[in-house]
Length: 201
Image 1 (cartoon, rainbow, N blue to C red):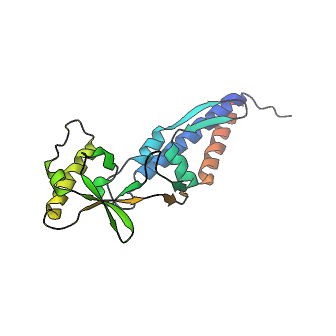
Image 2 (cartoon, rainbow, N blue to C red; image 1 turned 45 degrees about the vertical axis):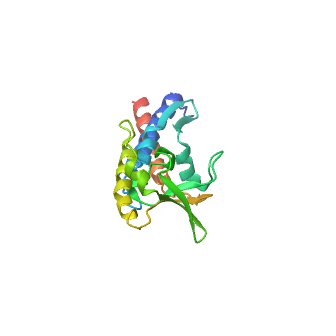
Image 3 (spheres, helix red, strand yellow; image 1 turned 90 degrees about the horizontal axis):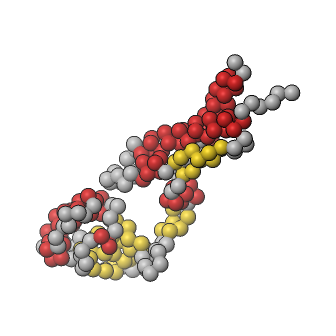
């Protein structure tokens, strides 16, 4: 009868291999442009950093991906505003991507309703006169500069839409959030073979 030798060591080896494969998959996703070709939020790089081999017993290897947004990628579902908020603010231009309206100076936007849809529209005078804080995140500085550029046209009678407001947004599951099962299975098989080759020498 064949008895498995060093089972905890085997499971640890498998767990580390799968964690490495997951990180490689997330790194590959990070290298892809986003759908709109906007500046990256580095979502997948963050998921890769959140992926860790936690430990192993004789029968189980545990890997943690400590990211709630990633869990939403896997399962899909509906996102609603947090407590005390009525709308989600969806950016309409690249410069606003990754920056929330709350990060701008007060009165930067006004609420407009057009054909039943809700928007945040820039106030040109506020945008032009607002000071950009030196310690503001790079994304906020980028957005403020873009807002000033856009507001020059708005000051001449054009309307500069910054965000569309929605009460909820529903996302389908991302079928590529995780590697294909065949990739994970191949890693497991290779690690098991590696282990048995080592302990049976």
